[in-house]
Each structure stands twice: as structure tokens, then as C-alpha cells.
Image (cartoon, rainbow, N blue to C red):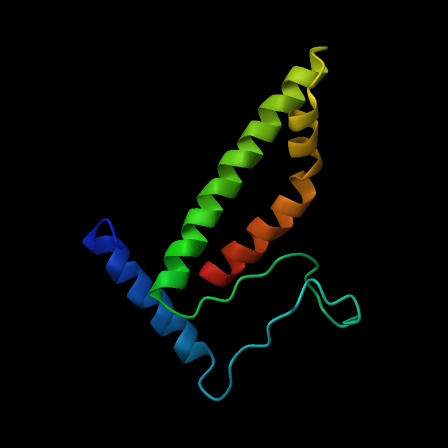
Length: 111
């Protein structure tokens, strides 16, 4: 569900933009898990925006990724001051590159 009228209008605008961008055929989706696809440009999870619900999910995922990346920055700062990170914190820091690629893909598909 949309929280505001603006979100509904923005979702409609984005869906129309995607539909107008690809009138004859649907965009090719790169399967990040398919290691045999050497022609793929993106390596990592990708997002396909097909309807309003997908736009909402993509925005929520983007917000979560931004929050996690901000936490990683704070964890790295703690690490540079000499604090030892626990296993869970170290795992989060190790996912930074993966999350950055996913965020880039989301932002690309939300434009």
C-alpha cells in the first residue's frame, strides 16, 4: 500500500516510464546466479520493476541497503579506533561490496 498520494503518483510515473522505454519487448534480465552468462554486465542481484508493488518493494530494499551501508561505515570507524568487531559485525562488513552492487542495480532500475 502507498502511504501518501505522492508515492502513488510517483509509482505510476515510474511504471509508465518503464513501459514507454520498452514498447516492443521486455528488457533482458541478467541472472546473477547464472555463471555461464559471460556477456552479463552486472554481477550480483538485479531488480526488474514491473508494477507498483515492485516499485514499493524496490524502494524498501533500497532504504534497507542504505541503512546497512551506513551501519557498515560506523563499524569500520569503530574498527579503525581499535575496537574488535564480533562475528556478526564482521559478516556485515564483508557484505559491503555485494550490497553496493545491489544498491546500484536498484537505483538504476528505479530511474
